[in-house]
Image: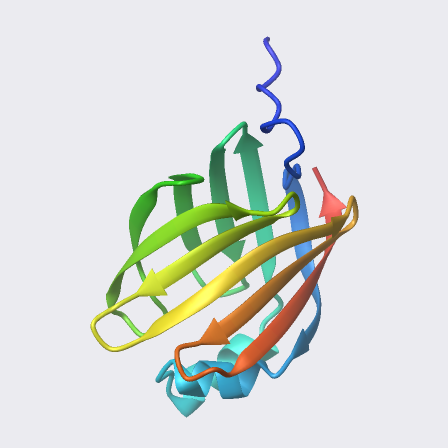
Length: 147
């Protein structure tokens, strides 16, 4: 079997299973994104994992939590894709490399807009930086738990 191609030179390698370690200011961020109280509380209580497969510019990100079917994103960095947000609305998501260690996603629906920046801090730490259209910032730190 041929190994997958490496990411572009100088880009981070996000491959692996990542488990949520810490979360800062996530409830106010979700509130700004018009997520109701019950969903906000459930999202904060359930453990979250990101299972990422990266082949060069292509990413496959599965967000997993117990009791949820999960969310799957498949995209090539630099392109736009569609997905359903937690509030049920369809969104267009623009993606781009930001510097040497980050992938930026701009999510837009009819009623909300937010930015997610996926940053690889080191081989064992991935940080999601979130900012709502109203300027509320949140940070979620994930630790690598497997390949």
